[in-house]
Image (cartoon, rainbow, N blue to C red):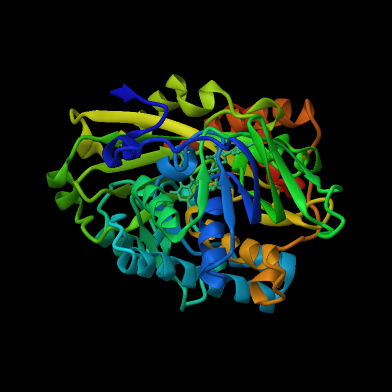
Length: 463
Ligand SMILES: Cc1cc2nc3c(=O)[nH]c(=O)nc-3n(C[C@H](O)[C@H](O)[C@H](O)COP(=O)(O)OP(=O)(O)OC[C@H]3O[C@@H](n4cnc5c(N)ncnc54)[C@H](O)[C@@H]3O)c2cc1C
């Protein structure tokens, strides 16, 4: 098995040659910090609305080499989060956001067709499935009979015949993609449309531009090799948002890891899993799995460790202990894979918000906005958040600029060092308790008590 920080998707797609860094000063209408899906889609939506806008994207490394190029490729709507959204924002605003999120799933597919980007887009429902009695009833609160439907054990196993699957639910609007092909395709099409993209360009700070009394509210993005003056800035740095003083208590960072089998089309066929459905289990520290166009099974686990100070580090990218556990869990779900090769393993940081929902926050000065908190569900929502960000950056007062996730009531996480210490202990207890439940057993009483704590306190860990 190859442990590779960048993951198989990026190797399969072939990363494009890097673009030169910013050198000197530049004027723009909108400056975007971060070249993952959030930043790239924001640039796209800005240019869609105003084709002559001057858009500059500043990316610390290379576009699409972060989580956007190496995730599981589940392109999901927000319908499974409807109950939480309704609790936070009320029925009408929650529905408005969920409907728009389903549009985003379809819009990414239409974009791939129109732009002739082969990102392996495949429409298929997303299932959430109980894999142990303790998980029965998972996501049942999201069932509305229209967007999310209940599935019996037989219906679940007709989709994918794993011996551990029980009942579940299916969110009807969903798709899978090849994440790196999508990110690289987007970068390429943006260049054709005239966006200026600078790689190897880390933004060190944003400040308001006092030297421009003619353009009050203009912002300057400072880098080591130059600066961009713009009318508006969008901060799309995902887990690194935890490093911003203003946002440091708005998110935690943990890791998610993926293992990928060799092509096993015979196993996929025997499971009857030929519809391309993306599936997650009912754990709090969830497993997620899907097939690929070339007949592999991708299996991920959100049970990786926390990053101190919300800063990603080495074991966010590849954590051998987490990889080994993920591989064991894969074989529990799919015993037919015994003896088959797991060829690749990798991981990456997840920006976990206390509500598990992304937020868009106006930064000081009122000419900059940041999106963060996708909590492992950012492929579809980043396209949607980018619609809000583009509207805000262009000063539009349309619906996306006013969706419920724009400047929601702040929800904070505990301060450090309690945050990492407490969450690390609780996550380890949850992992023990959930693994025991799958074996039909109970973990030790302390682990069980700690695992129940977040629910009692009304906190989410990760899903
Ligand atoms: C292993 C794994 C599996 C996942 N699976 C799924 C899935 O199946 N479905 C799903 O919906 N979501 C999934 N996610 C989450 C999803 O990948 C993210 O939510 C999404 O990619 C976020 O996009 P982004 O553009 O906000 O962030 P990123 O892709 O992280 O992009 C942020 C960019 O900002 C750059 N940056 C950071 N700091 C600076 C700076 N100071 N200056 C300039 N640039 C900077 C970084 O280099 C990076 O390229 C997964 C994540 C991981 C790690």
